[in-house]
Image 1 (cartoon, rainbow, N blue to C red):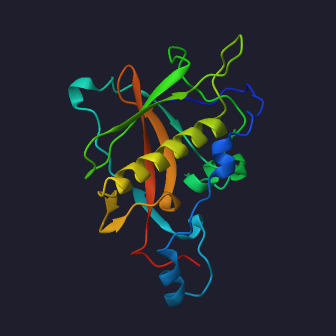
Image 2: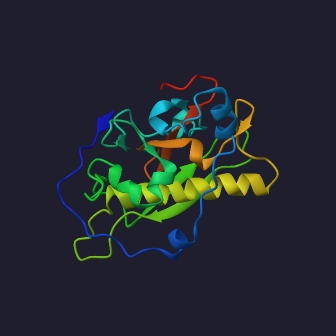
Image 3: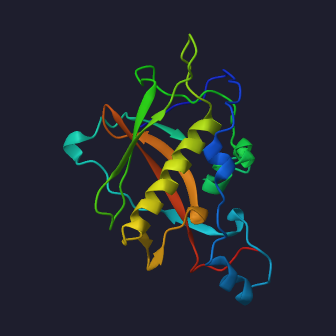
Length: 207
């Protein structure tokens, strides 16, 4: 497995998207009952235990080689990036947030993102902009890449809920607030998928 190290090219911030201005994230309805049985302190993502959210991958015959690249999303506290953070100014908590994402040179201006999770009828596939509209065509920043992935995961969760088949994990609905962005990895020559971690509410808080 090849791990790409971010380069040192700093990119300017992209204009504020009207989607981001209008988006309002609901509070996680599962957290409140937890507060009643703990200390009354609202838990942060560093006080919760997380595990990998299972995903349906491409069949082995379509996978790229074992040397497929992946990009990790690591915050300054050493953990993964909470998806609500990716959608607002807290995306700056990413290490190298304003540095160009380390995408391979053969990745075009648009990256094909494929998300597919157990219980969902079909995969969610979208093309997202991965390079800037400049003469050099450098990759977008790590912060902007994380924002685009979080936005699509939110749309995927909403799509399944609207179809009457919400994404579930261990008997409870998957909510954007419960997820951390772990990594983006290549699963075929033309497609990438994102892997997430989800909060485990069966564990006591670490206070």
